[in-house]
Image 1 (cartoon, rainbow, N blue to C red):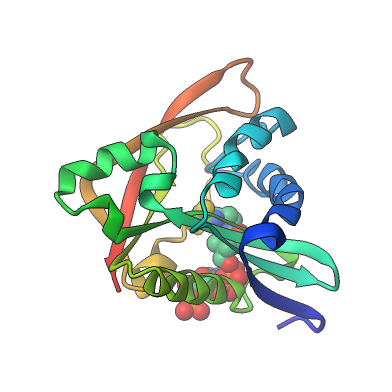
Image 2 (cartoon, rainbow, N blue to C red):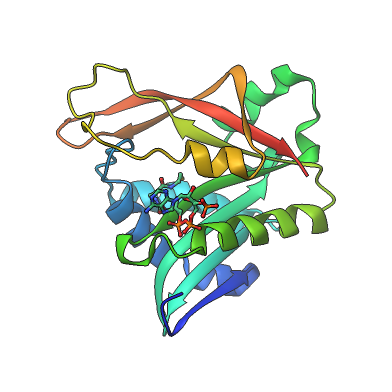
Length: 197
Ligand SMILES: CC(C)(COP(=O)(O)OP(=O)(O)OC[C@H]1O[C@@H](n2cnc3c(N)ncnc32)[C@H](O)[C@@H]1OP(=O)(O)O)[C@@H](O)C(=O)NCCC(=O)NCCS
């Protein structure tokens, strides 16, 4: 682990104080494949409001000194946008049993040293504390022939599978944002992954 990096689980006012940093990280990290998010502070303000409104929200922050260099968010499933909780209703598990893991974003210089595992450890601890039995998250699905698909790209699938998560067959959310190079928002399919704790 890089010296001087600490990981903290934040809720309430501490979480709120870090949200501008989360917006900056999302805009920087999600610009890359496969997210291609052409981010704006207006979009972020609206999107991140969920974490202010949800008393069960968690933000795991990686700090280098005082600077937020990575973040991983979660909310009770029913508190996240209906676009996410809605499709999960089809699996027959009450959404109140599920913690939704939203973004995990870490600046490239800090990757590959176990911070991603710490993010998941603390997220899963939080789920247990809330009495949740499952953790779910989504992964954007891009067409095989997408013009911006890189020739070599390491997906997170091995990481997620190693942590016990599996894709939920045929369960997708649809969510919109503006892609890099586009002039308007478009809706993308997001594959649900889930594990029982
Ligand atoms: C996903 C992300 C947060 C993971 O953080 P990280 O600190 O790099 O992850 P870790 O170092 O804990 O490694 C987790 C796993 O990733 C894989 N991994 C990490 N670095 C790797 C590398 N250089 N080569 C191959 N696999 C690697 C391994 O499977 C590893 O698990 P293992 O150590 O048990 O084998 C980070 O890569 C990131 O921000 N990526 C871009 C945004 C993103 O895709 N977010 C997820 C969806 S919201």
